[in-house]
Image (tube, rainbow, N blue to C red):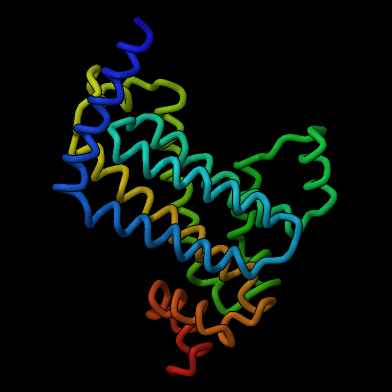
Length: 232
């Protein structure tokens, strides 16, 4: 009976994957490219927080699979964890004591404190310490992160506004997949921007061609980035 049950789920999810690839290859492809860009950036980070960024990417990879296979609630849940771990990595990179207490399970990570306007990782105070020229751009990425995190949380907590979107059957839902893909793309861009803020000058982003390709593609319209690229 268990074997039959699992086979039924596998057959249904494989059918959804086929429809996903047939109709939404471009949307998921963009998210996969963001994941690749994150991998390029994370590979340049040498601090102990790098482990959190790598786990964050693992969750993004799972989220991509879940989305492609029709497990949409799980896709939103894993996307939230990717966001949370990525932002925690940046926060802890500047707070080693708190990182150690988090690792030893003596302290919890606070999303609200990490995104706080006055002291969070997108605050003017924080950005000014690492890449002051990007401070005017930070708020919109913070707003994106907050919005996406809240939307993903509704699936985790079983809010009706979210769960009513998901079919009781394991089936392809283009509208939900499109919503997830858009959220994942914006989340990935917010994470990349935050990595640029925190590590851009520290790792010499404009002297590394692999990173230049990522930064120019994603943030080439930002004046401070164009200055760094020698385009202004």
